[in-house]
Image 1 (cartoon, rainbow, N blue to C red):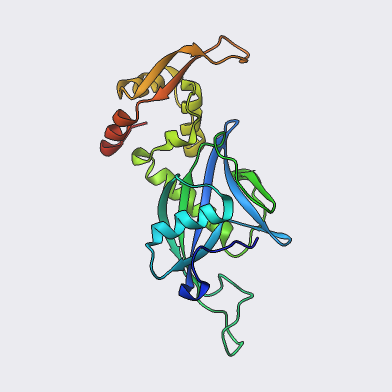
Image 2 (cartoon, one colour; image 1 turned 180 degrees about the horizontal axis):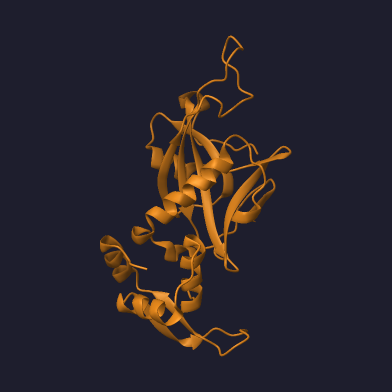
Length: 231
C-alpha cells in the first residue's frame, strides 16, 4: 500500500523506520490490524523524518496508513537484524542492508475505530495471523510480550468500548495474560481501585441476566496506573 507523506521524502532517515502493531479487542479476542501490499500483508510502517521525534513519526505513520490518530502508543523494541529485508541488497548487490525499525504498539477501541484506507486491510485474530512481510510476525510476538510485562501500568481499558461489563474487562485481562481469574475476587479487586463508574443501564441481548454497564473515571484511572494495577 502506497501512502502519501506530509514531508519531502528526501528529508527522511533512509535506513530507519517505524512499524506499528495496532491492537484491538473484539468478541473476546485480541486482534491486530494488517494492511495489504500488492499480494502480501504487513503492519503499518513508514519512514522517520529528520525534523520529528520518533513518537511523532509513529503517530504520523498510523494516520497516513490508516487514517487513525489520537491513540495510545508505546515504543517496545528496536529491530536491526541484517536479514530483516532479504530482498534489499547493498550497493554492491552482495549482502542485505541493515535497516533499523523502531517498533510501537497502539491500543485502540475496536468498535470506535474505522480505518480510512484506499487498499485492503483486516483485523486479524492473534491466533490466525498469516505470514507477513519482513519480520512483522516477530514484531507482533514481541509486542505481546511487552504488553504483558508492562500490563500493570498500561491503560488497557482503551481496548474496551466506552461502556462495558465487568465480565468484558475480566476477559480482556484473561486474554492478554492467557489465564483465568475467579470472577468474584477479580471484580472485588477492580472495584477497590474506585475508577469504575457503575451506570444505571444494563447490557441487552445477553443470554443470561443482563449485566450492568460501567465506564472509566479517567482521572482516577490515571492515578491508579501510576502505582500499578494488580491482577
